[in-house]
Length: 258
Image (cartoon, rainbow, N blue to C red; front, side, top):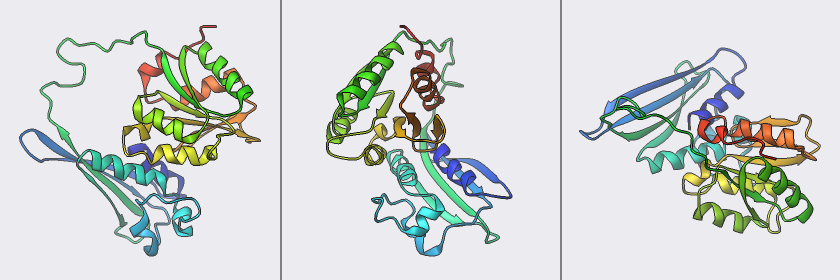
């Protein structure tokens, strides 16, 4: 949630800066509220678009002002996650009239431990294999991706259409989703948007998508990691490492076994 909101702020702030403020307040004896505010000195959001900022819409129906502000499915995901954590989201123009303030607030349970690994616990890296979901209907490309991923210590599930892909994500947890060039019922970019719109934590699954003619081997943004196609094993490995950068345990399991 922080990465999405902060990424938007950085991307659309040409001068000045971005400030992140965190504050906590006790909600009850068992939980507290955590509020995160991201303030920027960018161009702000047009007043006509503010009520739609956290609403997911199809590509053809998104207001041009919202597109210009760089919002859409990312902010919709932030709202859905905040609601799942019994919280809320919001937007306000900066006090000086230049820039924006995006915020979200969630409730967190109190813990008797000082940190996640307190009281003699240690973080251990299990020997589990990474679980990757591949969406591709063309047999040759699917075979290439399957071969690469198996050599990366991954267990792979393949789906040929977007409906199967979403059903698989809803039924089980995956470390990453990789979308190829073709699905039988939807475009890969639309499938990526559908993943982000899922009403569960599956919407947070890292998404990598193959793109023909991409000007760089890799391009990472808040929503997905784009990989130039035809893909090589080295670039796919690097893309996975970047997509899983915030998950050190998963990253530790990503290595060549063949």
